[in-house]
Length: 345
Image: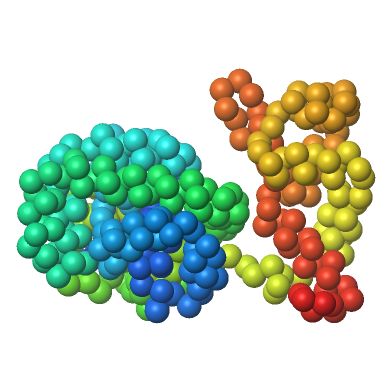
């Protein structure tokens, strides 16, 4: 049994994180063990289109993620000196893992061999003798997987996971324990003793006031699991499942649907969406490509931003815009439902 005791008040001892690296690793776990991941079977089917050599590599190294996910891939921050960032890039987290001390790499990968590969003696000997070589090969596979498949998937997932953080933040003033109570039966909550309880063969009690903050990380691909990282030197982390709303099930309010239709009902904005679907671009670059003034492009971008069809991120001095693909999919389904036209109709 793992028990985490929350201090009172607890909100200041909680933080939220997103991790593109951890989410990619969880999606790899889905590919390695699809039988108990019915919700993510569409991803399993899509990954059949990956190149044959990448599929072979993912299968060959699947012992890394088959059951236990090694702590070194779970969020990219050590207990001491964690950055406290909500978001990090895949490249930043990947570099963090590559730079970990070899003793930590050896220990984490050896645990994976013990739990996921039935204590394979040859594999365990490799990990213990050459942890940097083994980690390097794993990261090479992850790099290819990210580039060929998961980078595009993260574009869709990231705004949905940010929404999950915002929703959790709205619930947080009522207390951390009620927020986590919704994860039962994977988590049990004892409000009287302020305990979060997880049924694990690992016996460990953690005082969050001493080890915190408790980092809460929403994840789509960890479903149906709740994963906990509680051993030093790793950050104290709870990765919990969230299920993004299905675009088929979501019903738009009339005003929302009308705003979305108006946003795309102009040639310049359709051209902007087309260009941003190719890559992220700045206002100045869009103005040059479209032959419009930067002010005119800014007006069009504001309308697309207000309706959630594009979003921004900063790279150095530049603010770049990119399409929110999931929002476009939702809008198309909302329009289709007006006439009750089937998806293939």
